[in-house]
Length: 262
Length: 328
Ligand SMILES: Cc1cc2nc3c(=O)[nH]c(=O)nc-3n(C[C@H](O)[C@H](O)[C@H](O)COP(=O)(O)OP(=O)(O)OC[C@H]3O[C@@H](n4cnc5c(N)ncnc54)[C@H](O)[C@@H]3O)c2cc1C
Ligand SMILES: Nc1ncnc2c1ncn2[C@@H]1O[C@H](COP(=O)(O)O)[C@@H](O)[C@H]1O
Image (cartoon, rainbow over all chains, first blue to last red; front, side, top):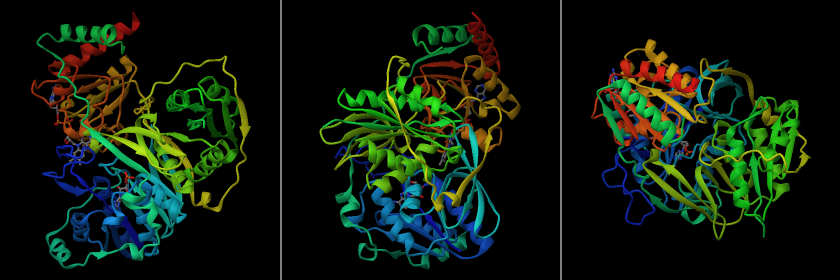
């Protein structure tokens, strides 16, 4: 089975975020970069699927040279191949542009199963997986929290929707996006890390991709970031200690009379 | 040139999501009197519901009523949305930032070869195209985005970000039917069942009040305190990841960076420390109340009202007082 995982490198969820001097980007100084947490679930599911059915597991990432660290982590976890798209002209595009690049990179791998994360926690796009599926003419199931394989081509996926779980029957080739709860991601082993150091990371350049250059990268972006701003400051409000009942009664009164939320 | 807006009005079992009405209200505001609002209504046996969309702001309802739409997949719905988009000539297509809307928008974007903006909390018309604001990196920054190039622009709107308008029964509008053609691809991903999650009757993402519990609850049996307070206040139950990971409650309830993002009018955090990943999912709430025994817990830094105390003492009192308040 040809299994592909899309992996994005993002700021750690712990990272303090400062806006860069240009007012439009995040200052990279001191920001720890990690594999997007949902991509860890995607990667784990890919490893489990390969254990079950055999095959080749390829990880793909679009991003600046540093993104190779994320791919290296996936190689250490057991990925067979790693492909990076890092050419400057292909970076800085919008979500659809990124999905086009990833889709064309994946197409050449003749994929059976493509796994993405539910969302990249930096841009909060929630859509790269479905967009890749549409471009490749494939079905997809997003926000998957459980998989049951019938055979190598057929499976049932549970996906979380608001207040309920949808059960979807699916036939490969297909795209899945992984949610928390799908599995418990493993950690890379020391031998895995040593072996990964020697594995190549293959670069895919624009010449190898059949994408219209006017639709991708910063030049092709049809959504531009005009500015970033810090979140609105929340003032530390009033605090009560001591008499619990008095505090509760006063808080409920304020919620009803002053804030009008009750 | 006018500015027409197409709204995907999500419903489940004949009941509209609140986000459908919120998007209609935003659409009306954006047309500024020089455009029409069209709503897509797709389902099985939902024809009678078209009137609700008109009273909430639609001029036209594009109705796709077909047994195939009982539990439709996003492939079929994005195809229908594309048809509606090409006949309505909308400048903007609004979808809810829900599991369904998040599936349709990118597919529609790829089909129409137009950009999409995900999870907008504000949308306005700009000189060329539109401008939108959204949270990024777990709410640690907000981005203002602008479209470049020709419409239509596709936007998913966060539930709760824009208020719905009251229904106006005097509004009139028309209904246009859209026929549903099947495609072999539809059959490759089939929704075969819908499992309602136990206990949760109120949609967490749409709830106006959320009461969340964390590790301070000490054990799963004590989650009843959270459920009882949520009941007394008429809210939904949320949780921190710590207790979800312990298996005290289902992941569907997790609020935060790797859970649900909520923006209720009132958020009550009980026995939750206020880790940055938790704040990512609730910091835009209207009013935040925290109950925690540690006066230095970070949650108090963003709480409007904080009660420093043992939740095992405070919560029973709050449940009792809230019930009294409701009864009065
Ligand atoms: C990649 C990543 C993603 C994450 N995503 C999320 C996420 O989506 N959501 C999330 O919530 N977390 C997330 N986390 C975890 C987060 O960092 C915290 O570990 C978690 O939020 C802590 O949960 P808690 O507040 O319940 O527990 P704790 O931090 O242990 O806090 C318990 C609180 O209860 C108080 N307490 C104890 N006893 C009492 C009592 N009797 N009465 C009153 N108060 C009491 C304590 O003072 C303390 O403040 C994530 C972490 C990582 C690394
Ligand atoms: N630049 C990228 N490189 C590789 N995978 C990506 C990239 N951007 C998004 N993805 C994948 O798509 C998922 C969802 O991202 P998004 O739609 O941007 O929130 C991520 O979890 C990744 O699996």
